[in-house]
Image (cartoon, rainbow, N blue to C red; front, side, top):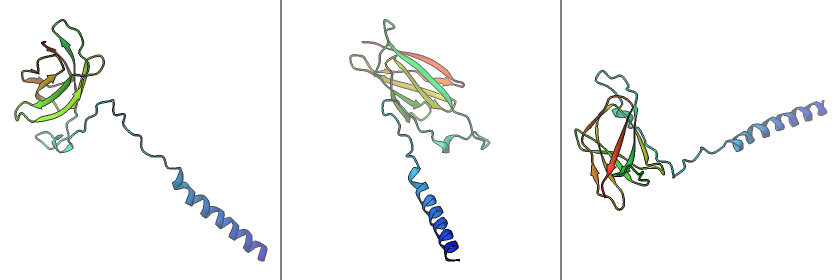
Length: 138
């Protein structure tokens, strides 16, 4: 009887030890690479007039100069056209590309890069996923 009690105690201790070690195997969440521009979507603004959630669209483009050469590292700010409120800022990639994830609406851009004049675009409507090329003058 003593041996059976010892076996049950050892088995119970083994199970307790295994379950207490499970938490040590939890991996940390992945960290974002700081070289990739990211954007947080404002969920409180993601509803249409009827209270239904709208899907964001991708607004993308390329920054070029007057000779159509790519400009990397340009700062691109997207603004809400109606209010003039800045929404997000990204830098153009090595390929001159940028993108934002927003709701369909009217927006304008402000683009600046070293050696170029700052560009403020006209108001543009983005009803769907759309691309735009923004040209900077020297």
